[in-house]
Length: 229
Length: 165
Image 1: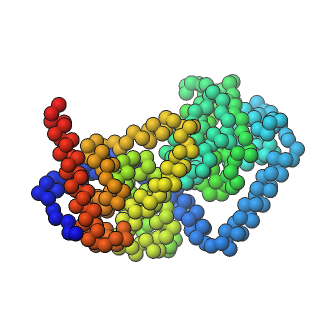
Image 2: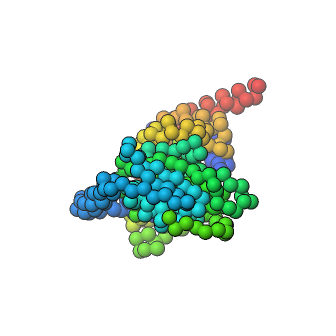
Image 3: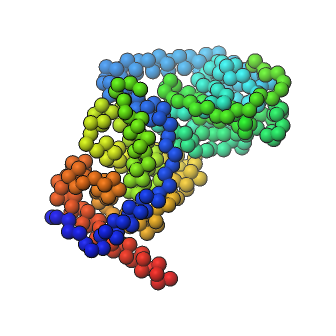
């Protein structure tokens, strides 16, 4: 059957063209996000042999992770943050506004929570982790879910410290969250990022070693000592 | 940029907008279109050696994006209970696309929408559209004919309704 053009078709086609031409298109995602995801596809195509090696590595990582979970529970409590294991298997995290990323990462690792902790940088995986961040992070009232426009619509949890932007001083009211390490899918870790411009901390789940990071604006650190944790 | 991906960044920069528009107009959901077009570009990067020699790389991206629908909806359904505000935003439709056109497109069968996406929105010729969809050129013409008949009817009805208010 051949397509016989109807007299009105040019009008309909023009209307279709015009409608699409007027379409507001979202900002192009970072090229790094595309290539990061593309590398996942290339690795998958590498074949079962490669996948076997990767799987073994993942198992090792999982065992190491479990060692952290099953090992002696530790609590860390500083003026900047607190990390403690609970009897129900969750890990309580209390964050003050001025925390040392490296110290927090170490404390979380001791508590069995693999994490990437950064300031002034937002990290995300593409595509997003199949399980939403709220499966592993049990937020308090201060936290809200938001859409991650830097990746392909992942979800992150965010909390804002109760400090006015003009008050460059450490918050006296920390934000708290409970983490369920067993709900972190294999091969993933928490991302915790702090941005002092909006006094905001973000928590999401990313693929370990398969993520990208973008800079976020930071303002000079407020005066006063920064705890080494 | 490695040899395997030489030229991809230019292709990505030049093709993002038209590909997202084609997918959005076909699916009626910009968030879905953005997500799946990005995924399709990632797959294009992974297979760039092949895709760069494709006769219509943008069509490859759009077709791949449209085929990724099922997995997207599967993932989205998992998030629904947790991010209802996001789902509401995702269902809010396509900003800037005429409602009547969007409604008319949504009522077309999937294959007819695919033909419209490639033949009309990407301006591919019938033969290339046919090869992209794995169907005969005559079948493309048939789908296009039926789609245009339905769109004429829908859009005429919409214009009549609007005029009658």
